[in-house]
Structure formats: C-alpha cells, structure tokens
Image (tube, rainbow, N blue to C red; front, side, top):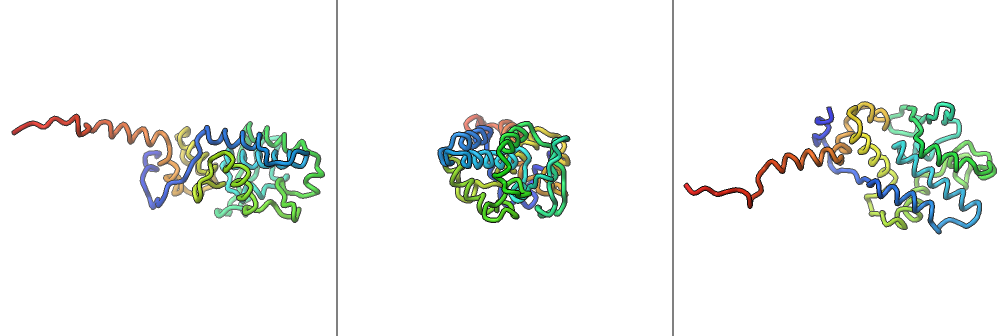
Length: 226
C-alpha cells in the first residue's frame, strides 16, 4: 500500500516540511524569545503560543481546528481531544490522542489564573472579542514575526502553520505501515492526499537512491571496442 502512495497522482507540488532540529529550534525560540512582555501577561502569551505550535505539530491539526478548540473539547480523563468537524473541509469530527509534549504544554498554559481567559469558552480566545477564537490571520502574523523569523526558518510562501501538519504526516508515514491510520489521524476521508507526504519520506528517498545506485555511473562504464 505504501508503494502505491509513491505515485504522483495529480501532485503539482510537494509540501515544505520541518526537520526534527527545526521543530526543536522553533520550540526553543518561543521559550527564550525576548518578544514577549516581561510580566505575567507576556508569559501567558508565551505559553499560549508554545501550546498552539505543539498542537499543530504533535497532533497534525489544521490551523482553524487548533485555534477553534474549546475547553469542552478535551477529555482529560482519557487524554484525547475532539476535533469539531465544522472547523475542517471534511465536515467530519474525530478524536485525537493527546501526546505527552502536548499534555505538558497544556498543563503549563492552564496553570495561569482563569482571569486571563475572561470567561471565554475558547482555549485560545480573541482578545478583541472573547466570544470568538484567535483568528488564523492574527496567528499567521504571530507565527511569522515572533517565531519563524527569529528562528531563521521563515520562507515566503513556503513556511506556515500547515507546515507543521505536513511534517507530522510525513513522520507518521515514515513510521507507520498503515496509511489508513495516518489518514484517519489527519482527518482525511480517503488516501488521495497522502502521496504528497509519502514522497517526502526518508524511506522513499532511500529506495530511490538504492535503485539509482544499481545503475553504473558514466565514469564506471567500460567501452568495449567492436
């Protein structure tokens, strides 16, 4: 099945992905950035941004899915989060397990006094209107100016919130032999989107390299006179 995913079925471009070192650099940038106010409010926003980054990356969430999360979406007794289908193009809800790194970031974020949320039901509320979540447009600017640029990882038109999702999809295809599990995790209703991630995996590149290495290089070909 994974071999079938290597076919370029209607793929126009391959996604940009982060390396493990890139993700570590991004997290360290948030944790050590001087772009946050040196007070409780600044530390609250720092914890918020770290939490968003880890949800996008570790759980492979779409930006709107992540930013629209409500407190009621979390089942902390089971350590899963419900992704509301109204926040994705598939219009299908799903449950995603919460990883250890996300759990730790959530604990840190939720340790702040509830006054910071001012009664909002959203985990990441808009501070202009607490009845609405932080907008994708506002988060896009935060990610670009506070995180990716300082980390030296911003590329115009290439690095964005979806890069975290593409990175996790590629990692999962690398480690899992079950593409259906990966598709379910990402919230895809079929496998048609997976080839663009599969082509970025290390296993695909190594398979291609092995096949190419079986072909003699030009300087190794002996010309026999007839």
